Image 1 (spheres, protein in one colour):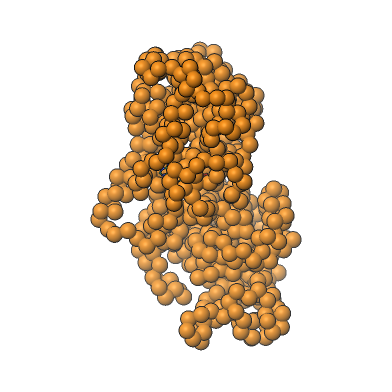
Image 2 (tube, helix red, strand yellow):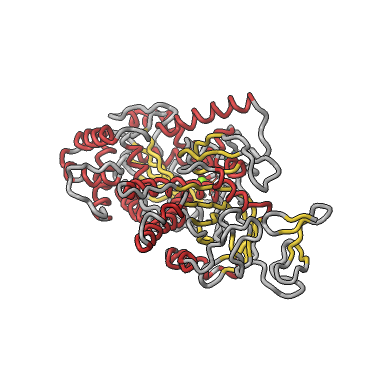
Length: 597
Ligand SMILES: Nc1ncnc2c1ncn2[C@@H]1O[C@H](COP(=O)(O)OP(=O)(O)OP(=O)(O)O)[C@@H](O)[C@H]1O
Ligand SMILES: [Mg+2]
């Protein structure tokens, strides 16, 4: 018998057993308490060096000798609750009995300050305490922004989980977004400290795999069992990362490919890991934004069974082209094809020369205010991702003032919202909902005077609260304009803007459906003429984002021709765990009970 580095004994025949740290009795791998003496297995401290779980009573790791954080040092006193937002505490504690004992796919993240001991010696204890406190605040804010949870403080870093205890189908993407966000924030903080000779760097590591959630304490400390080294490997990733970088294992890389840019660093030797594991450096955001983008890169299957729905949408559009703006909700359970049917519809619109502006609501950003509204405006102003701030400011100002010189007043607000504030303008702290709403109403009306526009709001079930309120303004503003607002969402999301005589819903017959729009529909040739009136025909393939996705698709096809598909490549990006429409293309868009966590 040998011992795995996560404290689990390996017995002959390859199955794992848990040896009780108190009485040495051998228990089943899944045991949560010792069958002999009743000791709890869950509660333990992950070693900051090798991630082995140690009993809380130990001062040193019994696997590698590292001093454990929870030994009366100030870090031990770090209160998880103090660093966790109230809504997340409530979510975890109110559902903990259901969460405990669950098996979940999750992504484990380790973050660690490099050479913290050396740094600590340079300043007095009080100042060092302040530095660490700010450091942990930045880490906690980044992790919670993407709905991860801090599992424990590891002295000069943290161990965090995404996807457990709160399930998230896109746990790996959330982990990577959090890592990049924290790195950005920490770089800013560290360079500020650098002036005082205290500059620090951080390294991070991520791995994805199965975990079993154990007991969750009132203090939010959570025990979990990592199956197949999920936690240990994340710690190894962090250890092999160069200072200032984020490394992810091949398991995480497979789930986020295309959503992030990754640099292959081969299979470096790692202590305690016998099978070589490929590691990748997480460099930045990639060209893909949605799972549908990813499905498109792999190659869409032929669209089946949606012609009737598309004809219905066309009928609604015909009304819009006659200056009778409408709002359309496409509603259905996860994976039934809402985004796909909307994509087909907007592609057909583009092919007819109708302008399309898109905004997506990513699952990982439902707590990030105004992301879809920003995307919508960026789409309207045709802004590229890497465009320099000065160029972006000029582009926005030119377009807005050409629409209406009166927009001069709103310009600082819009520039601020889009992250390129005018350095000479007075500070716009917390742009008010009313001002933004007023701007959007006026903007939509003026733009629609010169061209017909289709606004697509994709995956609106993940919209943040601030954007949701502003979409309400948009839905009201499209009346009497040549603007069609199409949103798709799961039935658990019940937006306030789904009423009114200009609201329609797919599937037909559901609330808000006002009869077949084909009744009295405008003939196609008139619709085309109306669309062209004053409007610039858009390239059939859409905006800059779509071009980037197409580039990713052709690169992926070239890669696929060069090498056989990798094991697991057919998994849904983001580690989707729900039964989705991929298996049943053309499944009805039905209103059903919510399926998602
Ligand atoms: N009618 C169809 N014909 C062929 N493939 C389809 C069809 N509808 C959906 N699919 C495929 O099924 C998968 C899931 O579709 P889609 O992403 O549109 O679902 P969704 O309803 O938007 O899910 P979610 O609620 O998670 O956003 C995609 O790969 C899509 O290409
Ligand atoms: Mg969707």
